[in-house]
Length: 432
Image (cartoon, rainbow, N blue to C red):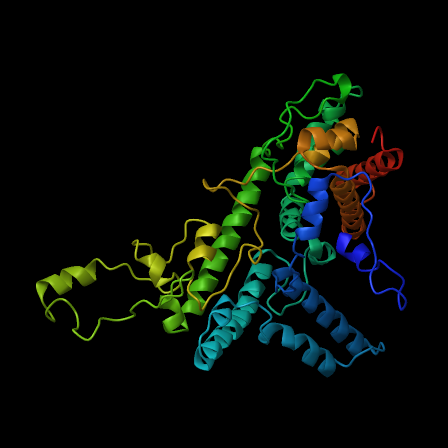
């Protein structure tokens, strides 16, 4: 904002320079603004299972309209040429291409990315089939409309699909309904539903340091604030099963892609120093005689690997990865993943779901943005954006669920009440 305003100082076409006046701002902050570098903005397309599902939905609608004689804005052939590029033309940013030192290495890196793109599409189809969202012919089924409607919330849209199709969310709300107490806010179904959804939608990491919470009578936030309480066992089990299923799928994707590519020079290059390591014995050959007992014993103890980088495999690790972080950090140059590519909930070092901020539950209890700053480490600007985003996403969820449920459905009614309460609090600000 400072750069934007200072760039407009002075009269355009008249003044050669302008002046910026800082009011009510410390000298330290002024110095930091003047001397700081601009942020680097980069754009990168990420192909995801939801993207594929949206494309399949568009294709299905177009085919249906063409068969029934409805006028379509673009022909099927034109649509195929347009959408087909997404699945074979690489839009991933390749670390291998950026570190390539020759045209040959650049071509290898680009070919690796094209291969990854095509297999990523194939395995995304497999994931959609396992989630019950498409059939064998690629036609939508189940709650595919809900998942595509909430495409911005991936992977929360896939987990919500599981919670609805298994009936776990309905069961939870029906169990909690008899426990409601009119004067006890934290027992209300809207708060209970917000507590479940907050584990999946608009997750916010816990602040590193926060002030000790002060008792506020009836406005006191959740008991474990700023951490969200653990999920109920049944819902937690569903979330973990989803994570495990996706992780296994992407491990197989990594192994499949790596198995199609031979080890290249890029696989034996240290990432930081750029030093090239040996990819074979030197000119003196192996340090043992061929067919010797030592060679036989040595080879029998080697750990086989295709997907993991040989530099990481030196520690004796094979192609079974311990965690998503382990996988994306030790893959070969032929497979470029980052954590954002995996449609999973983040996990900690022990494989458990990473703790998340209880901001939405606390706001539902006390309705004060000021307390979100004090207790949850979220400033008012970010808090307003988060609450508005959560409210709008719940509205989108309601509009999608209406196509599948009845008006008296407990989730529908609770969601509508939840949206109404959030809108009321945002309008009144309740002590903002």
